[in-house]
Image 1 (spheres, rainbow, N blue to C red):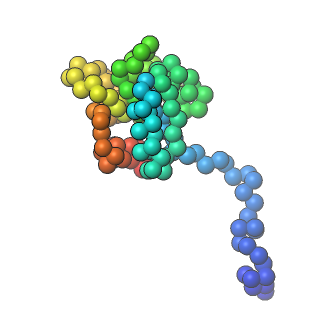
Image 2: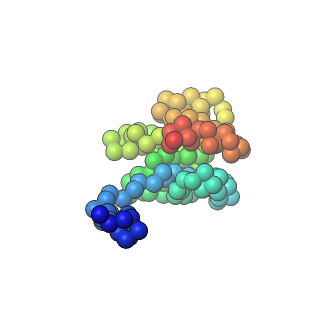
Image 3: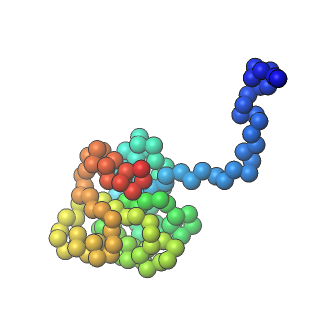
Length: 143
């Protein structure tokens, strides 16, 4: 019997050409503030997540339609289409309705929190948030 030394690398014995691609844990960060997106994306990357960014609801919907993320962090107040309007569109789509959405916003008015809950948001974080709280909430949906 050949020893492992003469057989070469064990990895060479397996052909992974037919293996399905690994779906990374991708988070879409939607915020009209480039500085806020940069800060949140930096924190998420340190946690090991892949990220995609959108500056408004329409851009985000196009991204979700092309390649749905595993989780969305969504600002409420954005020009053109609010985060709440985007969330309602997502929830009305059979293909996209199950994507967990966490609102990440400065808007902590009870009316908007209730509206987000009615639109089936999974969680609601008020900016600014610290990295430990962001990690805790994100890991709830992407362990």
